[in-house]
Image 1 (cartoon, helix red, strand yellow):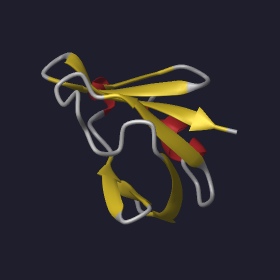
Image 2: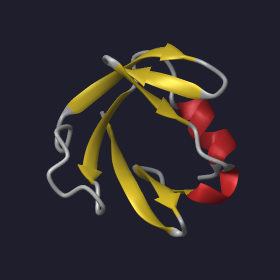
Image 3: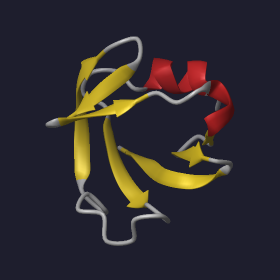
Image 4: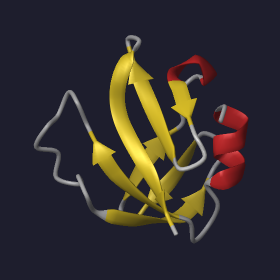
Length: 82
């Protein structure tokens, strides 16, 4: 999954869960299911906060998960919830 695929998939009503935040092991949203409530060209709103889209090179995705990289290392790992 590339950035364009991710943007197509993250539409209103889609639910995701933050399953890993390697640089922030005690992140307050770990394990919390959040729903996309607003879609913009540069970000999506997940509940009360925004998830900004990174540059295309900083996204790795599969059918069920996507990872946002920072400095080439995993920063946030999300899982799609069905």
